[in-house]
Length: 295
Length: 130
Image 1 (cartoon, one colour):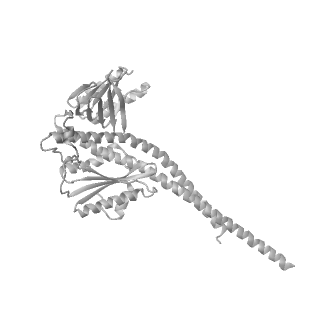
Image 2: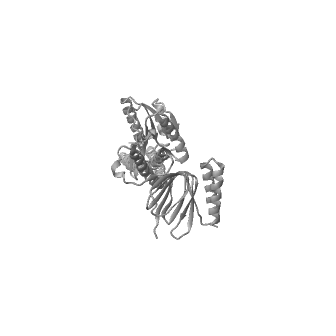
Image 3: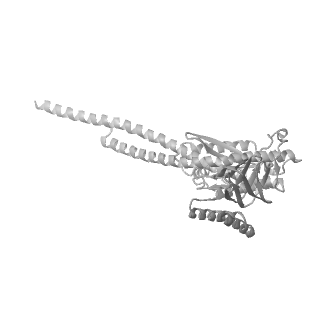
């Protein structure tokens, strides 16, 4: 039977851990609420820009002989190199949140390899960067402190270099992989192909009656502006969505940890009481047998 | 009276979402006004002031830096990188909004003439607030 003192120390240590996990859960809950609000607000913008880009690009595609010239809207038959941008958290202790994203990145890399497409990895978030450093996989770009404090300017600067490379023909595709927020208890993994933008699905006949007039001198200029916005916004949205998901994942993980600690404390208490009872019984037997022997 | 549905969106949220009688927009090829039943069009914006005539005939101004606009018969949608509404409850709030608006325009445009024009517009819009 374990020593009484040892058990007592264990109980104390587990309850201290429980206090920490509970505090972390509360912190995450508060932060989640803010992040969720932010994500909700920029979702509107994301939806609108998607609508607008589909409508305008389809309009131009249908009207213009030879289709759109902009490389971002063209189908690329034999891609040679693609950029994969992944977003992970800067901190751990959030269950399977980061590892899910990283697994998806590895899967995508494998698929690219099978199709003989070279991959350039660009990472945001300390956890993902450390993972690939540990696995000896080279990252083209590694940005920390952006996933915990998303910032429009920094996010635009980051994705701009991929966009430039795409326009110049250095890369033939751009993927963003992140774990997004679905609701308070579920995260949803997103593997999004941002470039090239697919305009094939659009039905020209249906829109022949649309009276939309494109005012900018040059259609392509308008498309270019829209497309830049679209790519920038996709990146920024991925960041804030991922932040909300990170907090919800952490909240859950810490909730589970708190419950587990509670269970451990309970079972340790039972053990402690048993040990105490055993000690008392032994002492009693000793006293009684002492008395018996004196008779 | 007929109104149009106006939305001004930035990546961090909607700056304006509501009914308006008319709206003046700083298009790339010059400022243009939009009334209800305007023909559909899409164009680029430049840094400038969007004047919104509200349903009570008062005018509200929003400073935008760069973006695109899509107009159709019943609604106007502006997607911009950054926007500051020139409004506030107290004088200090308004002064702060003006400061923000100026720095927004400063960062958006590199021609000093354009900045000066927009700044002047901001000032005159702000005059009406006090």
